[in-house]
Amino acid sequence: MKGVKTQVVIGKALNLPFYVKATLIFIGLFALLAMLYIGKGIIVPLLFAIIIAIVLHPVVDFFVRRKINRVLAILITLILAFSLIAAFGAFLFSQASRFSSSWPVLVDKFTGIFNQTITWASGYFDIDSQKIHDWITNTKDELINTSSNAIGQTLLTVGSGIVVLFLIPVYIFMLLYYQPLLLEFIRRLFATDHQSEVKEVVTQTKSVIQRYLIGLVIEAVIVAVLDSTALLILGIDYAILLGIIGALLNVIPYIGGVVAVALPMMIAVATKSTAWYAVYVLAAYYFIQLIDNHYIVPYIVASKVKINALIAILVVLAGNALWGIPGMFLSIPLLAVVKLVFDHIGPLKPWGFLLGDTMPSIITIEPILKKIKKKAK
Image (cartoon, rainbow, N blue to C red):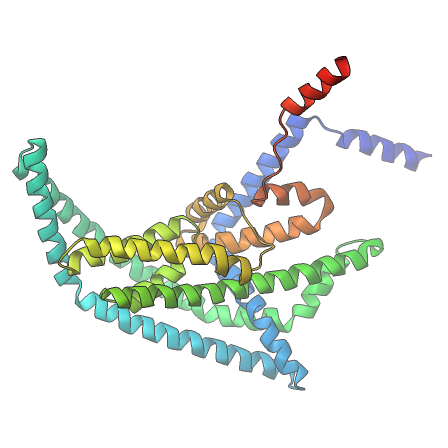
């Protein structure tokens, strides 16, 4: 009897008012965000390692099925993956070096365009052009000083990033090696009555996440080829570098697309004899975005993972505020993982629906009024 009474008391104690529950949720959310921000030096590399491990897991399974030792299969997979990444990085670095060597020429051309624009604006709006030139000179000096400080900070960041870069392969190896242990740990967290259901949810979520992340990689490659081809046809300088940057930024929804098209448009204005080339670049990128949104994303990226624009923008901005640029790249894959988990757990399905872009049918009051009038007659 005492046990029954204790359960009833606990049940009543947990039946809290809505405002108390909401307060507890906000406090817990604030504490979670604070921990994520404080531990970003550990969490961000670990998250990148988890994403890469999920993508590489099918390759490891392929070698294991060929009767290769699991440790050796993981090592072969890591060597192949990081060889590709190193080759891509070397190519990107060579393109960036070529771009940096031409940077002073681009700055001079931009300065000439600015001077022409100032002359036109001062005559059209009746503003003293000397004041505008003085303001631009002061702003330029401040920008140079700020850039010098930023370069020093960037070198420190790169130095610490190199240390972290050596840790990521270790993380990936451990995650791939201990994958059965981690899955068994997740299964044992739940009661024995739900073991089969938990196993099914974990298996489905893992497979969908793999398809989604691999789809993102394929999408980035296709968009990079399309962007680079379009810029090469238009004769824009540094076409391959700009195409790759555009594909990487395309992972960041909406915001990344704007930055991706702005860069080649600026290069077109600075290097071409007419500004119409910038318009051609805008038209080409818009056409590529249509192809990406209507064909690449629905058929190559997992179609089950659809996130509405409002949530996507908010999460990207939150990721930037929390972890900087790495947070912007991690935000959408993490949100997709969260949505997949929500979609597979009954009580959390409404939250998964909120994150998605499936619009419910709008119920209007007119049909209801017509039925009431018919009954009245």
